[in-house]
Image (tube, rainbow, N blue to C red; front, top):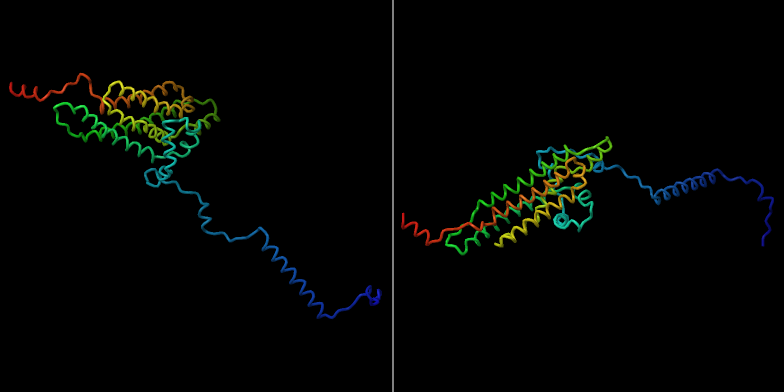
Length: 296
């Protein structure tokens, strides 16, 4: 073991200038290297702003009411959502109590109502002609397809789907009561819009598609039973969804009765005009026609 002079260790020692510059340069490089490694391994990463992100943050322009772009949002709906809304229009207990406020009023669509209306038009026209064929099957009458039933059914359904919701929207807007400004704001947020009423009425007609096929059964009491069932189910679904908004109206009992009455009139008109034949209606047979011709 070598002997170390402690006095030399406590004294200041001189180093050459070259040694001092070299050691200082090494320390500075080491500090910069450690700082760079620390910044590269940290969670903070600086990125240059991209023009695309700036464009996405800009608000979207409102399209004109008369342009096609304005209605694109009402056709942006998934098939599963359409099926769910059709089921809820027949069986509202399958969904939540606030389904209309959460799903339909916030995102109304016109895709489902349009296809339901078109399907119902052709279903009534075809089923009505089948019903007329069955009525004249045992009679000496030459049956011919009535193409006018398509235009008649289209006129009735389109007028009902557009005019009745428009009248209901106007009635809710002008007859709803509010005592203060806060209640007015709450009423404006809870009141259904015109598009949501179009959507709701369009889906409420889905019950008439299977009923139109069942109306071909030539049993009078059974046809009237289907009328009551279709009118009650479709009208009750509308009242079930719109009851919070209807209660705000001064004439909510009249509005409820009107909704049920219009649905009953629609179902009755479909059955009487397209499917039902009066019991007292008689068609002259070939023998009667030949007798009349001989007398002439």
